Length: 399
Image 1: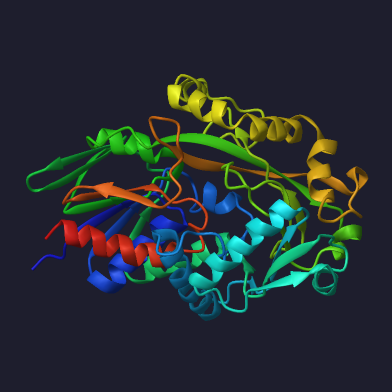
Image 2: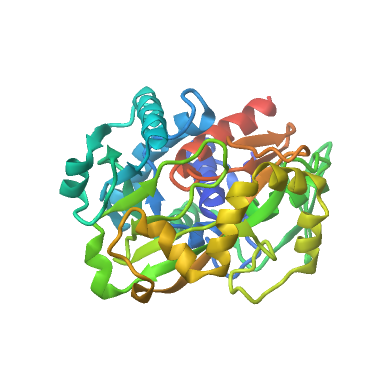
C-alpha cells in the first residue's frame, strides 16, 4: 500500500518542524517546498535568537501553552544535535510607578504560565545580575535563553532528509487547489498532487491562503525591525537580555539590549512599516507590497490608534541617536559612538480587516489544506510544539 503523500510549503523553522513531525508521528512521505536557495532564509534567519520563557502571554492561550511545551522540546533537540544554546537569563526593567504595576501583572501571568524561577527584584538586585543596567524594579527570568535558530533549522532539515523526506529549494508554490482526490500544488515547473498540504508560508501566508480559497484576512502587513550592534569593547556591559516593560496599549515592545549566541550585543529592534515583505537590505522596494499595505484601510485604522507609538518608532527609524536613547534608559553607559548598524528583520504582522492585530497563533484550513496564518514571537521558540499541534489539527480536520 502506497504511503500518504504530504506537502509542506515553507522551509522556515516552523515548516521544517512540521515536516519532521509528520514523518516521525505519521510515517508519511513528505516534500517541503521552499522558494529560496536555503532553508530559514526569512524570519527564522533574521530574528534575535531569544528562546522565550512565556512571561507575557495570556494564560490558557495557544501562545502560552505552546511556548512552555516548545521550550522543553527545543532544549532536548538542540542538546541532541549540538546546536549552540545559552541560558543567559533576562530582566524586564521598570522605571516608573505605572511600569512597576505592569510588571506585577506580567509576574502574575508568568507564574500562571508555569515559567520556572521567575521573580520580582529591586534596584540593587538588578545590579547584581546586570551591573550596568539601571531601573527601579525588574522581573528576572533566569530560564530565558538564546539559541542558534539557523543552526537548529539546518538540523531539522538534516533530520527530514535522513528520514527520507525531500526538500525542494528554489521552488516557489504559486497556487493550491483542493480536489476530490487530493491537492494540486502548483509551481513554475508544473503541478504536483498530494493527499494533504500544510502551508507555513510566513510573510506570504495570506497570499497563498487566498489561492486556496481562504479569506484574505488576517492580512500580512510587514514591519521591519532594525538592530544596532554594540562595539566589542563595550559588549561586556551586558550579560544577558535587558528588556523594557511592554505597554499593553501598543503592539510593539520597543528597543531592548540583548546578547546573542554569536557573542554580539544587539540594540533593537524598532518597528516600522517595511517597503517590502522581504526588503532586508534597506534599498529594495517592492511596489506591490507597498501598495498592498498602504492601500489597506485597516492599516490606517491601526496607525490612527497608535499615534504615540508611531512617533516613537519614526524617531528610531530616522535617528541613530534616537534609537540609542531608547536603549540608554536601561544601560546608560551605551553611547552613539559605541554602536554600528546591524541586521534587519521583518515581522509578518497579521492584521484584521478593522486594523486590529492578531496576537495569538492563527491556524485555518479545510480537510486537506491547513494554513499557519500567524506565528509571531514566540513562534521560533514554540516551533516543535506548534508542529505537534498543527499535525494533530490537520489530521483531525481530515477525519
